[in-house]
Image 1 (cartoon, rainbow, N blue to C red):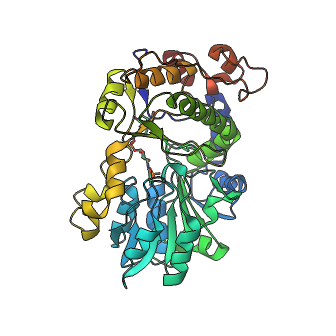
Image 2: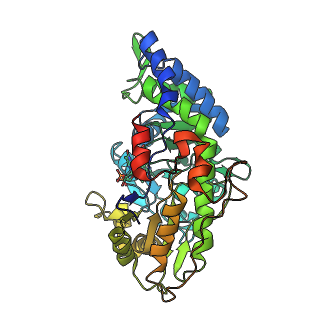
Image 3: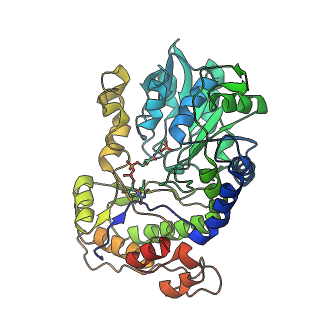
Length: 419
Ligand code: T4K
């Protein structure tokens, strides 16, 4: 491995020169925020791309989650997962709602519907599941429970950009879904997020809430917040949309390569299924007892080789000081989440990860295994590479795609990015 660190992710950035015309427009019209032209255009374009009708852009997913709960007037208790990023439960606390943790399914890492049902009390008003790593929750069973008990469903879909379930956008499920467009996500606007809801009146209410509650110049309908996405971020989103399909395809190539190679290493098990309906936003693996290192030893071993995997999601949300006193946060109640938090590590996956880097990562994973001689093959992109590109010469192959898929060593990629 070179001296350059490899992180769990690296934001995808389109060629800088393609962004300049957008900036020129902003500089020309002096509209920087407050539902400007790029904001309106991105809402429409994203709705179309994702296959959803009512989408409202936000500054980030955390404010979008907080606002979604406000828009639905959720109170009391909400059942959620401990196996997520802290923003999921924090959004409840910011609304004075008590999070109630239910255990997850050990295979899918998502809330187990049977465990949800056990936690319902007279105070429960909603369920907040997470499509963890972009894998759809059991949306039908969750809706069934919600309908039976009269609960709302707010999906934290921060990982689920572009994910489809039974041929349709997974974002169509529940009362609302919240996307993140953070730098580390599949589709980024530097910072950003969105709420997807099911009707125009609700979208209008969300739009009032994200603009301090203003319904018009003199009417404030609620104690709203400032959650508006700026024109800069919206413009970047429009440009990112032009590149997203190729970026997703590159993720799929790396995902397929890891899967093929990991079959040869006992004890490292991919935690997400293969599939074009998913977005390959993360590559989580379970470190099973038949691998010679524990998960934490593997984390250090990778780090020693300058590969910075991440233990998403360790610690569990329920272990943090503001949650651990809750009865539902106790370990005995969350055995599956606990095991995942102790055993899972996410490997680097992002469009700019080179073939050579992916190969080195597999080699480093294989080295502690008993059979040190396993054959780590180069990524075979023959069927996936865009036509006309040489499948085995990364420099050649990606020269056609310009800075976007530059496979030059990281130092050169950095230079290209600031040109
Ligand atoms: N719900 C769920 C389920 C979420 O996962 C998240 C966010 C949210 C809600 C809230 O969404 P936002 O409000 O953020 O829109 C990262 C992200 O900061 C966080 O957005 C994400 N989930 C979480 C899973 O991962 P960290 O603490 O791991 O981030 P950080 O800064 O360590 O970044 C990871 C690696 O990415 C770095 O080692 C290097 C690389 N990186 C990162 C950034 C920010 C870059 O190369 N460039 C960058 O600009 O939380």
